[in-house]
Image 1 (cartoon, helix red, strand yellow):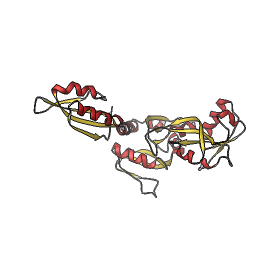
Image 2 (cartoon, rainbow, N blue to C red):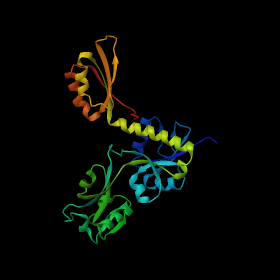
Image 3 (cartoon, rainbow, N blue to C red):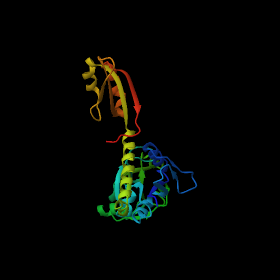
Length: 291
C-alpha cells in the first residue's frame, strides 16, 4: 500500500486562508462545500476537514497524522502533541490573534480582580479557568456555544473571546481589560507520525514549503540596474535579507542587483534607489522564501 499522510485542514474561519496558504506553497486543495474530504493534487496526502477545536484530539488519537490548528486549542485540550512549525496567519490578517477579557462599556470593571464572584462566558474554558486561578479570582466560567459577544450584560458579566482587530467587540459595546493569551496557527503532529520515517520526512517537506510561503507574504523582490560607479550608493540603501546578488551586464560599466526586502519598506526604498541613480527598478511578488 502506498504511503499516505492523513492531514487535517481546519474547517470554519481558517479554512479559506489555509487552502490559500497551501496553494502558495505548491499544493492545490479542492473543497466543494459538501464533502469533509477535500481532494488534493498530491497522491501522498489525504485531507479531512476538522474543526480547529478538535484537531489536537484526533491527531493525539492517531486518527490524523497531522493537522493545522491554533495553539490556543492545543493548550485548551491539554493533549501532548508536537508543534512541527509555527504559521502566523489568521482569517483576516497575518498577525497573531488574542484571547481577551472583555466587559461591557460603563460596567465599572477595570481589571480581572473586579470580576470576583461573576460569570464569564467563553469557548476557551480551561485556559480561562487557569487564568483566573493564577490571579486568585473566583469566577464562574461558562462554556459559550458561539455569539459570545452578545452575552454581556444579560447572560454573563464578562467574556473571554478571540479577536484579530477588536472591531466586533467594539460594535457590541465591549472593552478589553486584559489579554488572556495570544495564539497563532501551528502544524501539529502526533508521536506515532513522528516515529514513522516516511511520514516525518513528508511532514518536514510540507512544513518547509508552508513556512516559505508564510515568510514570502511579507517580502518582495527588487531588481535593478546601476552603473558600477554608483553601486556603493545603491547598496547603502538596501536593507537586504542576505547580501544582494550582483551580476555583470553585457556592458562592463553596468551591473544588475537582485535582492529581497520587507514589503512595508519597499515604498521608502525605491525612491531612494532612484535618487542613487538606479534604473529599471522592478518590484515583484514572492511565492516562497526558504531560509
